[in-house]
Length: 224
Image 1: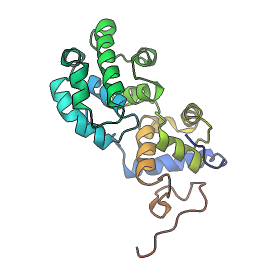
Image 2: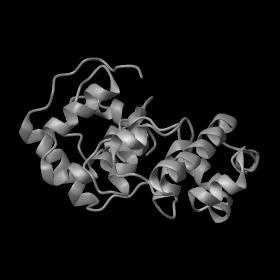
Image 3: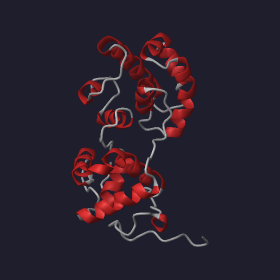
């Protein structure tokens, strides 16, 4: 992940104002991956690496009908998993990981997704970001999964400047007011995905532009 031009961190009052605004606009933000239960959520997040949520949802619709549990996924077999998700990038490696993590869930956790970061990260294909997503969405823990969108927003706005995803994550956990931590992950990712875009942020319609340190602000395109 490339680091944007170094900006000064925002003061506490501005950070609070930003998240109050996010909360005002969308009190209960939701992720865009489709899932049925904790297991299918975990699989969907594993498959979403270097893929769009829309692409993952298209590929998993039938997969989750066939295999909504670790036991069913193992019974389906790696080759059939590959066939179901072949429209997703790196599908062979991902199918191998999904099959293997399903086996480990059966062997180590009685087929249940563990509510523990260390146990989650011990599963094939599951890193810190994936674990954070599952812990946040399913287990309602105030974790923050730093993807490319959130990394960009943290640095560009001044919310949490950092050279690595972990640095941005730790900085955000320090500055975000406790009452907003549970939903901060989704607010920031969706903001980066649809407004604070990589090549040309849409500053003219940004709800938090008045506090953001990004300069120069992108003007409204001509003709609009």
